[in-house]
Structures are given as structure tokens and as C-alpha cells.
Amino acid sequence: MSEATAGISNESESSVDLKVRRKPEEITRRGFFTAGNLLGTITGIAAVSLASLGQSKRAYAQRPPGALLEKKFISRCIKCGQCIRACPYDSIIMAEPGSGVAPGTPYIVSRKVPCYMCPDIPCVVACPSGALDRQLTDINESSMGLAVLTDRETCIALKGFRCEVCYNVCPLMGKALKLEYWVNTRTAKHAIFEPVVHSDACTGCGKCEHACILDKPAIKVLNIATAKGELGKHYRIGWERERL
Ligand code: SF4
Ligand code: SF4
Ligand code: SF4
Image (cartoon, rainbow, N blue to C red; front, side, top):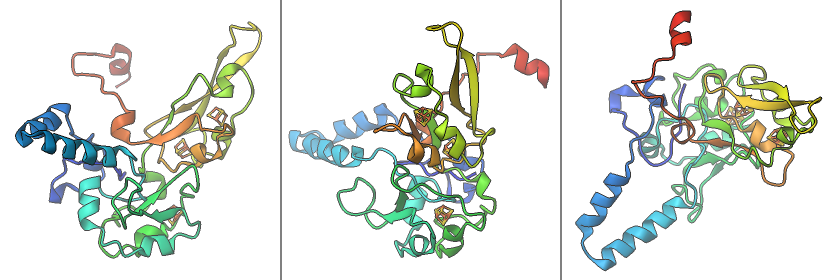
């Protein structure tokens, strides 16, 4: 799977394989403050703050399928717009100055137009630079991000209504997005059907975010490194080991 990640990557030139592209980014607060100390002047710090503000306008740019990790993607992309022209759904747009995304680079705003996951992945085929990796031949293996139910308080399914719109539009329904049900404790006789995303299958296409019926979506595609936690080596999940 390929992962578009905003800001940084820790991959080497030769490590652009599907597994490495899933590794979390390595920006640390420590790194930021060290850079700030080096500047040493109020002016310098102000400049850094402004730069940071510019960056944070859009913390995560959802890149087209097959995109290399962000740093590598930015250096490879020649801003030719071929992927944009190749997309039959106009899912990909070119970043404009001030958008918070590197100007001229292609990205997707799922809430407007998600990726429709073309089986022949014409955007990747059209890319002449390798910024969209042609090793990606199965769109179901793409990794543009990870959908997250970011607002459980507002999602009407979790209030006890039947919604499931996001579930119904998911191209990997039943794998990437499943419905899990449990007792509605408010009524004690109805069920709540919760949409649950599974990161091993979600491609980050954004169809769920696009289709969410709320004025602002309760489900959103995020950077995988932001969305995923990490268990830690000291935890042992006994029942999972037993299954191996
Ligand atoms: S897979 Fe199809 S819909 Fe998705 S970005 Fe590429 S060309 Fe557009
Ligand atoms: S982003 Fe949403 S619609 Fe697309 S695969 Fe993931 S859960 Fe399904
Ligand atoms: S479409 Fe939106 S409101 Fe409906 S179940 Fe999905 S996240 Fe919740």
C-alpha cells in the first residue's frame, strides 16, 4: 500500500516499497524546538511561527493513489498535472498558493470529490515522474489515508438512528467499513449500528467522508500516522498470540 503523508517521511531512496510507505512519520516536538533555539532571535522565532501557521492550514494533504511519502512525493512530483487530467472524476485538484499544500502539487479533497478507485488507476499510469508509484497495480491496495469516525458524539448512528450512509458507499464495505451493533442503553430495546473502520483494508478513498449526511462529516480521512496508535512492545495480547 502506498501512503501519502503530510510533512515528513523517514524513507530512504531505495525504501519506497509498500511496507515502508506505511511507516509513521517522524516529526517530533523536540525537533521543532531544537530548530527554534538555533534561530535565537525574536525575529527568527516569529518567522518560524508564521511558517508553521502556513503549514498548519492543511495539516494533511490527501494525495492521489500510489503517492510516495510526502517528502519524497514533493521532490519527485514535477507538477505537470497529468494525473489531474487523467482522472475521469475530477477527484484530483492542483494546489494553489495559500491552500496550505505545496503549490502545483495534486491532492484530493474528499468532502468535495473523493477518489472513486478506478480499477485501472489512470492517475498512476499517467504520472511520468514516479511520484505516483506504478508498483501500485491494485487500487484496493492503495493507501491515501485512513478513515476515522472523528465525531462519535455527532454521528447520528451513535445516537440510535439508522444511517449507515458511509457504510453503504464504502467500496470495500464489510472489510474497510463494518457495522458493529450493540444495545442502545437509552431505550434498552433497540440496537445501535456503529460504523467501524478497519485500517488493514481502508484505502482512504474518502467516499465515506464525502457521503456523510451531516453538515460537517463525522467521519474523515486522516493521515495514517495521525490516525493510528501504537501498542508498545511491553503489551502482550494473549488471545491474539493463541491464534497464531
Ligand atoms: S483512481 Fe481514478 S478516481 Fe481515484 S484519483 Fe485516480 S483517476 Fe481519480
Ligand atoms: S475511506 Fe471510507 S469509504 Fe473509503 S475504503 Fe475507507 S472506510 Fe471505505
Ligand atoms: S454517514 Fe455520517 S452520520 Fe451517518 S453513520 Fe456515517 S458518519 Fe455517522
